[in-house]
Length: 163
Image (cartoon, rainbow, N blue to C red; front, side):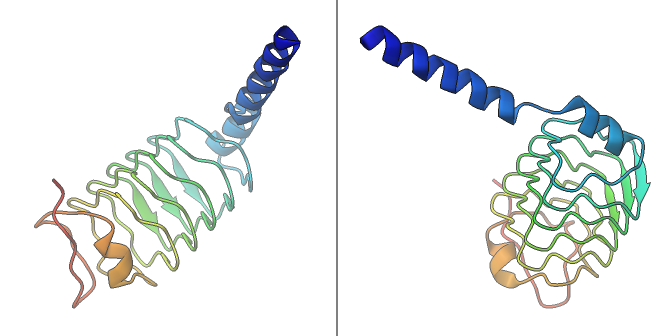
């Protein structure tokens, strides 16, 4: 009986791990500059890419690398960008409404006119980032993130220092 239980637990674990693995077709779609809403882009390498007017709403971009990329008018609403590398990326007029950016790295990232309404920024490193004209950004969100003296924020807002 115990062997059956252990075997069932093992199979369930393998199946759930497979369901969470990255999807090469989804990644290739986005790498070619096409929309892929609700796609599994776990750990995708999307660095050094330029994309505009694509839809990545509700996509799983956890641990993805978007460093040094330029995204114009891209929808990231409700996407999971936790632990993602956004180093030096440019997000012009992007939609991050209700996105999860928990523990992501956005050092030197530009969020020009991007909408961050309802986005989770817990642990997000915004050192050297430019959020001067970002929209929907609240002090409560910033209080859960961190930055440094070179982080540019909308007038009247502050951010705790990264440790």
